[in-house]
Image 1 (cartoon, rainbow, N blue to C red):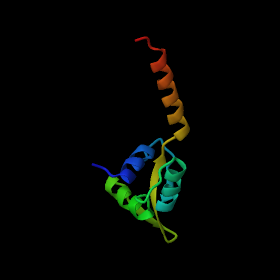
Image 2 (cartoon, helix red, strand yellow):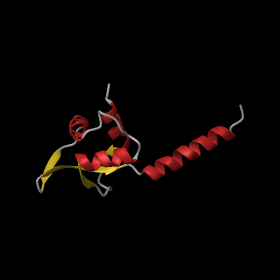
Image 3 (cartoon, rainbow, N blue to C red):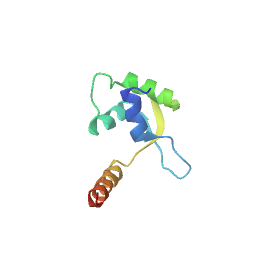
Length: 95
């Protein structure tokens, strides 16, 4: 069973596909992204993020002295819009 850090990363980070424009993120970059999306706690550290990224299958590449992961972040705004649409559809359905 994945821990909280791995679960959060699986929600917001994915492997790039051919059509994507991936970016390089350090563990610190990913920690800031998770923090802005409401993920906080003692377990959310750069070390934990590095371990989780490795367990998910991401490979770290050293760039100018910092290890970075080539990844694509989920579109948070799109996810929010879809959740809102789902909620509206549920409330419109008669029981």
